[in-house]
Amino acid sequence: MFAWNLRRLRLERGISQERLAADSGVDRAYLGLLEKEENSATLDFLDKLASALDVPLAEFFRVPEPGAKKPKAMSGGRPRGKR
Image (cartoon, rainbow, N blue to C red; front, top):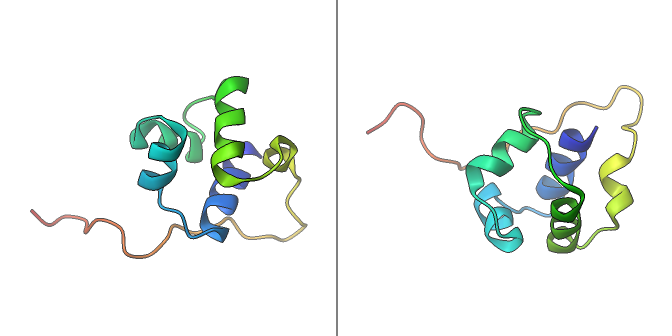
């Protein structure tokens, strides 16, 4: 639920992972792991994210509407497979 809402909130605001990571003081890769449910965040870090996104902490624990689709990544990211 946290990962779903983190990505939803970030995308609703049009914020890249890079920008949110910089605004909350963490590495972008760590933020990506949180969104992919491959890592956990401390309560202190949740507070930083909530502040950076300008939302109440409880917003990370909002239950998605029935039938809601998983938030998709923003377009315009790094090109894949090109060097």
